[in-house]
Image (cartoon, rainbow, N blue to C red; front, side):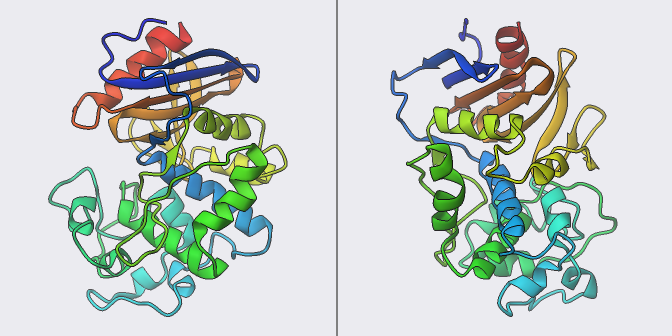
Length: 292
């Protein structure tokens, strides 16, 4: 596999029919924890499915406002915000005026990070017209804290016990909000092999760890992003070179791709964080190198 011309790719691991067929690390360190950026969001979706199946978290139609331990909006109070459901945040189709792809958006994540309370930032956002897809990290922060609050334990502990350890993943480095809550905004540190295992988990319909029904629901096309791309429960869905893929993605073009028809899973990590063409580079890598 030729990896020149794709920017600062740090690792690529590919499995076919469950067996690793390609493994490469720019630094020669397979045990290094890689910053997965927003792939972290998809991991949160897995944890919500686990918690619902175990009866530790209510169904997806539950308003998130009911799950935050009494925390509520101080600004822009609106009944529409109080009725935002778990499912709407999983699909990024809530009424919050929040769009990370628009620097002028009140809810852009760059406005959230300098604040001392990310949950309050999200709760205090104004509402927008319509509830179509809008990429909103603040909404995922709400969702993660709602899960952590309901569980009554650090989300990192729950994830290790219920998801990572059964997969043989013993090392994970979580980020935290300024208030000390487990952050699902991004930045979860995992090895590339661990990322691959998460992809294989969903290729194998949950392996008895994540409920198979939740896996099916998660990777269904539920919200349209553009003419080529759809969204499930914090999973992206799109075709590459004629092959449909559901995938995790994060800043810099970090990816975990599952191609069901090829029985192929690929994990890509990069440090292309400052490149505008980072996602296009990863798209090309997938098409020109992995699928080819």
